Amino acid sequence: MSRQAAIANAERYFDGGGFLAELARRVAIPTESQNPERAAELERYLSAELQPALEKLGFRCRVLLNPARASNPFLYAERIEAEGLVTAFSYGHGDVIRGQDEQWRNGLSPWRITVEGERWYGRGTADNKGQHTINLGALAAVLAARGRLGFNLKLLIETGEEVGSPGLREVCEQNRDLFGGDVFIASDGPRLSPERPTIFLGSRGACNFDLSVDLRKGGHHSGNWGGLLANPGSILAHAIASITSPTGEIRVPEWRPDSLTAGVRKVLADCELSGGPDAPAIDPYWGEPGLSAAEKVFGWSSFEVLAFRTGDPDRPVNAIPPRANAHCQLRYVVGIDAADIVPALRRHLDKSGFPTVKVTPARDGFFPATRLDPEHPWVRWAVQSIRATTGVKPAILPNLGGSLPNDVFADVLGLPTVWVPHSYAACSQHAPDEHLLAPLARDGLRIMAGLWWDLGERGTPEAA
Picture 1 (cartoon, helix red, strand yellow):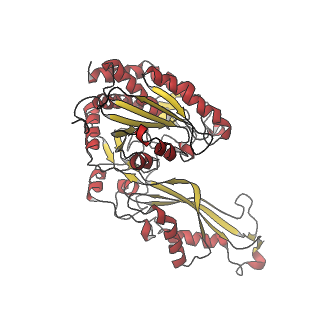
Picture 2 (cartoon, one colour):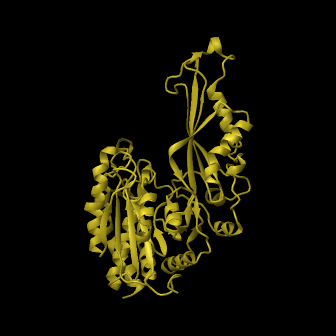
Picture 3 (cartoon, one colour):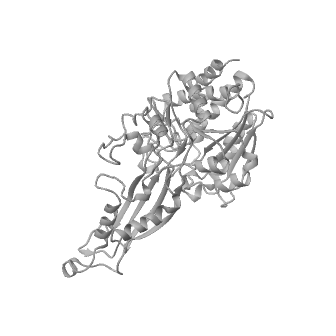
């Protein structure tokens, strides 16, 4: 019974094909939460796939109905070994975005794992089936070596993360006492670089909204009316241009954070961005001047125009269009007043001379920003554990550049949150040809076996 034995068990699970077989079975279940026709598949993934696997590991399981809608259920599982032990809370999501079957490269399918060298293609391999399968496989490795975990573990799997996690906040509020614990440990998102283990401690917030200019009922001939009628596309383009500089520097004062502290700068100084060989080249001129690439992504806000439309782009005609609209997004960090994001933009547009531009918050696409102090004892514990397993100091990100429902775990459940990602930035997550890198999966199994083992040892922050 040893830590190294648990890690060796995890390695054998991967090397012997057990991990691939288990993940392939899970990828084959088309759990598209954006497709209403897949509702039964979401429930099947929980009750027919995950629940039996967890019960074999000694968990008590039950499916929880979603308090916010009739679909997208939750699976709650717990293994309580003894009172007084450290209690961890973990999380994953079994849903995936639409398969986009017809857009995958020839020979690939979203619902079948295809192995090509180090790449394992399939929808959910990276987000999030591969990641929670790694964590469960590592738990089995610890149980095989120790005969017990040595800590209590509670696990929640949702099936609506890709549609904004409806009901997640409510189910955690309703079960706050049941879900309570000492620390949150889970996996999602990418590493800082494929080669370097990473932990992140929260996520940037995301606020999506629509900008629109609607001037009249129909289009009018550009020869007869050009120069006389205001063009909504031009107005909206100039309005958007007022939000950032030509190089992406944010010009709305309330969107510029004051939380890039010395402690955050310290951990980000050790972080060099690399998405792998297929990642796009970084544009060094873009974004806030004077910040490093890591500070721009993990310590600052970013404004993006996700879609822009005026007239009929596919079949343009010689007419001044009556309206224009754009779907936009602000990614923001702790320190930005989320309730003031849209009002601040309204004030900015009015001040800049664009009263005709309407701002409409999106019905979905909102996640608050969260961040655990990089000096928190649980962060130091996790860093020490990962370093003991890999011999490498992990990158510490104060928050993920993307957005997750981390606020539910940090604010509703009051847990310090430590995320250990097992993917990388160029994994084609949310796109055709999504894939998991096999070396990262194997390394993730080793890391998580070490973390789970150490959680059952003396010396954790809550047990010291």
